[in-house]
Image 1 (cartoon, one colour):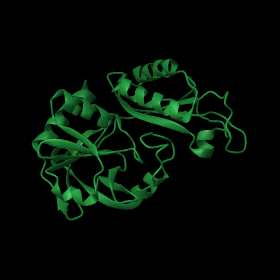
Image 2 (tube, one colour; image 1 turned 90 degrees about the horizontal axis):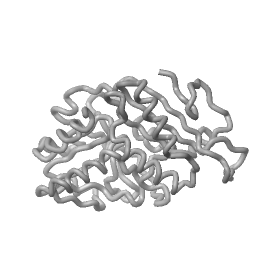
Image 3 (cartoon, rainbow, N blue to C red; image 1 turned 120 degrees about the vertical axis):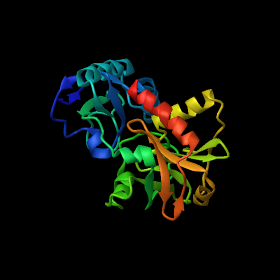
Image 4 (cartoon, rainbow, N blue to C red; image 1 turned 45 degrees about the vertical axis):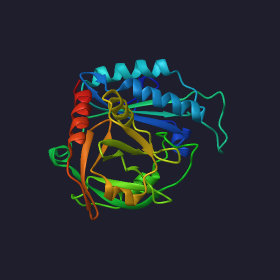
Length: 271
């Protein structure tokens, strides 16, 4: 399917775009099922927060309309929205009157080995550390070079994801996922106030857990705390939930709470 730029089919982009020059923008990647973007409201809520924090001017109702139209034409697949600050001149200073540029790209449905969901995955312990920057923490901004470096650390088929830490050695996230630990029946996920991406599926899992009266905790997680977990899983808005069965010398079973939340996530993605 053709890409859209500002609502029109296009295969080119201005060389002055600040997303290209500086990574000045945000993006959302969402599953499309039955001609509709999955978890659209959560994606738009995160996008609105990002636009407010980066002071990128955009019409969010127009964005919603374009996403719905594009998804309807796609029917099934993975939709990526890139929202940049638009064109700029040389230098870091931006034009306060500039309007955000909307780029939509469609891809076929993501295909992963069935074993990832059924039997769990092994995490690669990445050496690349996430930098601390509270002003950008939680945002899905276009500056993803840390993830590019981390993903380049493994090329084998034994690892499906990587584990990323911050500069102090705290667990933050996967390269393209959020991470949860289960301990004594409670869900624990890293605090993302310093760095990391506040994932849409992460938010949905926390919401679902609350509705099911499952205790949740958002907290700093030192690396050594992983060995005390009863279960570990990763999640994102395209594949849902993958159990984690190992990382380096550590291993965990695929537990009942992981399975329950995996079923809920699959139902959302298939709705």
